[in-house]
Each structure stands twice: as C-alpha cells, then as structure tokens.
Image 1 (cartoon, rainbow, N blue to C red):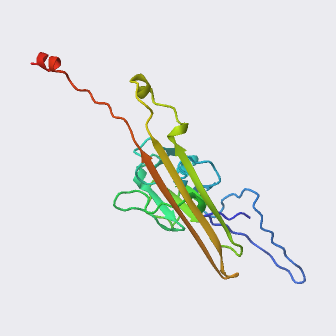
Image 2: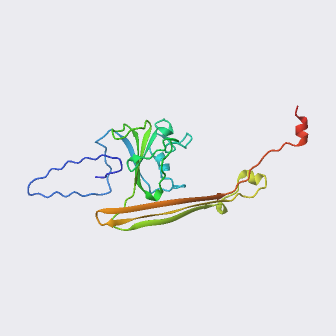
Image 3: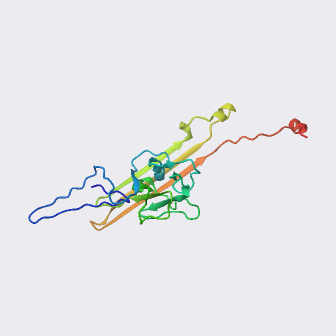
Length: 224
C-alpha cells in the first residue's frame, strides 16, 4: 500500500484467533483511488529543474497550460481556469498570497518530499479553488541525521553572445547567478521528536546593453 500526499487509502483486515497477520509496507505498486472521485497526480521531486523551483513540476500533470502570465497561482492554468484559481497548500495549510494571487511562501527544492496536483472533483477538505489544487509536502527529520549542501551556478563565460550584439559589434553582457543552500534533519528525541531545516539564497549580478534610436537633425528637418 502506497500512501501519498493528499490521498485517502482504506484497507480492511480480518483477524482470527490463533493466527498471525503480517503487514508489509513497500514503495512499489500503483494504487487505484477507491475512496474519493478526485483526479490527482503525485509528483516526486527527483527531476532536473533549471531554476530549482518545485512548482514548475505542476506542468507534468494533466489539463495544464502555461499560456497565461505565469505570475499568479503556481504559474499555470488548470482546467482552463485563471492561474489565480489554483489553491496552493503547504503541508495541508493555505500558502496563497491573497493580495497578488501568487504563492505565499516559496520553499527550496531540497525541502520538498513530494506534492500532488488535484485537477477535478475535489473532496470536502479542499476549498477555494475552481481550477486545481497544488499540495506540497515537505520533508521531516528522522532518527538518523541527514542533510545536503549545494550550489548551482550560471555564468556568462559559458554563454554565447546574442544575435543583436554580434550584428552591432557589441561584446557579450555579463551574467552571474549563484543559487546555494542547505538542508538538514535529525532527531531531537529518538522516535518522538524530530527537526528539519532548509534555507536557500539566490544572488544575480548582471549587465545588459540597451540600444536606442536617435533621429539626426536632417531627419528632424524633414518632418512637418
């Protein structure tokens, strides 16, 4: 039996006198949703991502379009609704910027365990959304200490120059993007209390060349 974020799984057991029942928990096997009519897709975060934004994985679900502005909700239109019609949940709690309609609190990719995208027939515990629901579940500490330290760089030394710059004989612009952070988790009281922390920073330093058309005096003299 696989239990994923936002799912409801039921299992019946029958015990008899003098017998032993063994329940094995594994990570394999697909489960058919028999408890609710909700259409959902669970996404594991172990996928490549250019910006390391976990909400970009919403595009992997069905009935998704990125034809909108990309600045509200999770950045995608679900079921043809407005992007702001998506309800964003973080560990089951609301994570919406109610003023701007965007994500309330961004989380580092290394802090995400998995998330589900609900696209139809939401059950009673879900509200607000007319398009879809994105429910993110973060990691938690365990009885063993674990963590990560990372840094991802994008620098202009490995980029090619733009077409306009080459056509006008201009040098390549400078661009440096550093994205770095950590995640760490472990026990405080074994089998009872755990802790997990993850923080990420982004530094971008760049320059760009702007082109402007300036009319000459001869051109201005020809205008009425």
